[in-house]
Length: 78
Image (cartoon, rainbow, N blue to C red; front, top):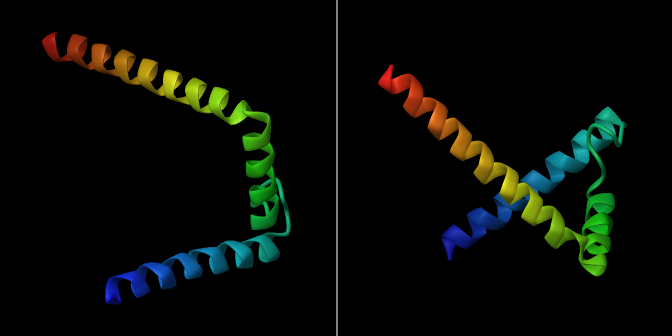
């Protein structure tokens, strides 16, 4: 029970820090408001384009990891 409270307090502090940073910086290009992020997230889920974005991100990450791995092996054998 105590661990759940710590997790809840941590999440609330993170969100509060995000909101505070949003109001201090006051530039949505640097730190968007949490409400804008939630609305965009809902819009992405409704349009199903989020799955394409997730696929592209995973694909790029895997390709980058493979290239880095191969370069590391090449340099290790030299």
